[in-house]
Length: 461
Image 1 (cartoon, rainbow, N blue to C red):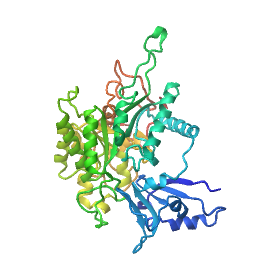
Image 2 (cartoon, helix red, strand yellow; image 1 turned 180 degrees about the vertical axis):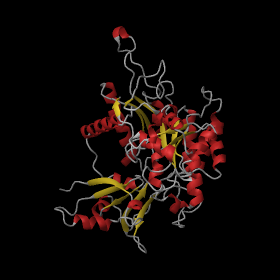
Image 3 (cartoon, one colour; image 1 turned 90 degrees about the vertical axis):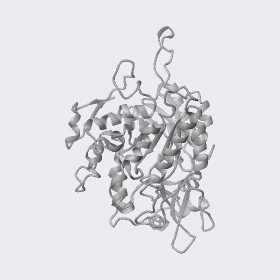
Image 4 (cartoon, rainbow, N blue to C red; image 1 turned 120 degrees about the vertical axis):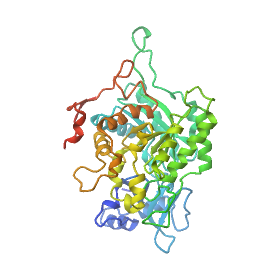
């Protein structure tokens, strides 16, 4: 059997002792006692911005001592050597992903159906889909292998919708590199109301739409690939770097904005967040008056916005003035709590990180999400994290208690806020006449459920 062994979820910061990174030698040792010690292995880190590959996986990807790091990517190497150690980060992941056999459409559909069932069980009725987590690396290149994988999945979702087999609503975001294809896509825009009712009257509302474009500026804090203005405290050799050409990124943001497309940008480090905000500002100034929207850039969303430039209030004001939506994931805070202060030092970690209250105080639209499968999909875990800012049962102090939200603020961010982030306000996220009846039935109706040890259970969707 020469099939690949695929997996992930490892986080060296939670190991005992913490901080020791895996290498290809670990996998060689683990495979040595199996029937086929030469099976290629690829294991993604929990944040999907790094992974470890076995010796045979590296060979299939033609990664060796002569292989140079691709733009925006890093191939880990043993000290004082060019020999790859098995670690692969950011855009270099595309080298591995390109040689992993792709599942056939039937297997993909089966996987989607399992995901739908899991989401519904957790009370999720609508998602923003940025594509297969294994295909995101390298999506900066137009019509890349990664982009083709993402578009292929979107075609499967569209087909399921046409067959009335899509049980949740999907707002799909294609790579920004393919903004022209996104602009011309027939499913671009709002969910459509079909004329399949009696006598040609309006019938079922579609559940798949192409909502806009997604781009990545940097990586993750855990992998030390998030882009900061200053170096990492625990590795002064790096401050992270952009995973894309920033000149091309800004050009594409402007072109997509002029075409009326929503742009979502992944930015975690303070330098990346600032760069995304400035790109949004430039697009706003260039397109004001050239589109029919009353506020031409109010749909620009920064994904994660985890570490704002200091002082935080000035950064939040820039968001507000530019109409940027902060699309954030409170559960990431629980994952980063183990490493943030070590990576960044106390001031950057605590004062600039996950500044939800500062954003709300400046009237910045705040949207919550899960970033699943990177973090826990359960929205109530995220709501509790936003309110308590520490993991339940942990001895750790709340992460900057001044940034705690009320349960009402958190719930609004995960409902009406999320709808605004996907440009579906009025259809989703609120219960009112004219909206879609996407209900979730819980076993608890009290907003103060977050104070209890047990989280609400989803009875029906």
